[in-house]
Length: 367
Ligand SMILES: Nc1ncnc2c1ncn2[C@@H]1O[C@H](COP(=O)(O)OP(=O)(O)O)[C@@H](O)[C@H]1O
Ligand SMILES: [Mg+2]
Image (cartoon, rainbow, N blue to C red):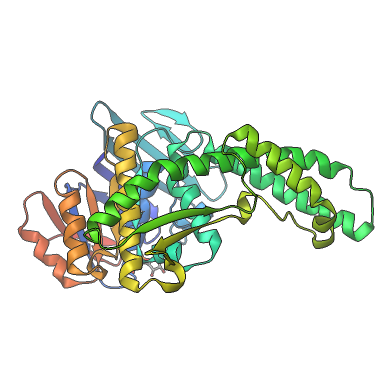
């Protein structure tokens, strides 16, 4: 995937931006000038949605009623012209080569973002790790997003019913119906997560091994709220329905669904110790870098294409070993967008195939 050309109109603090990137692009600017906004715009143009917000209308520049993105993308065998319109009053519209499309993922290799927020994947609460799997690995599986939304809908509706049953002390016969739905979508989500983890795990361990010169061992474990007996969807369904049925009284008392993928977590064990609790900052960043490199590699294996890499305000936070490992990995193969407030960035000016830009209050100038 390669961004040939992009135009933004009323996107966050950009009134109008026209940009023709190179293979390596560095955006240098002070705080609050629009670096993260640009990163999100590029992610949006490639994937059809924002990385940073679920409330997409927020991206419309204040005081305006619409925002538009126009992207010309190139893959090995095709060109894609993406037009996205957001309006305060209408649904988002996405067009690909002139035809309207719906849904996510859009069906091609995406973009991988690495930003300081990712430290939450290691340090944060379990929902951060679930979000990571759902949003960053989910797009590898076509119906994952759909099944996840269905599952989340069922959890909300079932929870409403549980609370109603508790408060009104009514018979809760409908809960069985919701439990079937819950187990149906929940087992699909769980089976897919286990499948993805099994698939990506060797890649993550490979990169982690390389980054630590095989001095540190990494184990990734999926911690399910279910007692998993088998990993096939059917076995997981049977397990789910029997466990959740047995919990009915307790769930009514507590007014919430107590088990399922929305309660699960993963743990990263470095040399046997949980990286969340015991990992040094250096180990945590190494782990994150390995996760991101594995994600890129996974896209390559699935689509025989590289995703675009967006490094928002992170590259110069990595120590020099990790920084050079990352740069030599992307070198000339992966279109990369780096944002930074560090003036070391200006050193990239001398490299072939790279462009350095200065961002200043929503306008961008080439150095
Ligand atoms: N919808 C919007 N319209 C106009 N400005 C916005 C909008 N959303 C955010 N901003 C502004 O964009 C500025 C730059 O944000 P950001 O890209 O996060 O900066 P940074 O360069 O530090 O990454 C902030 O000052 C913020 O107030
Ligand atoms: Mg920023």
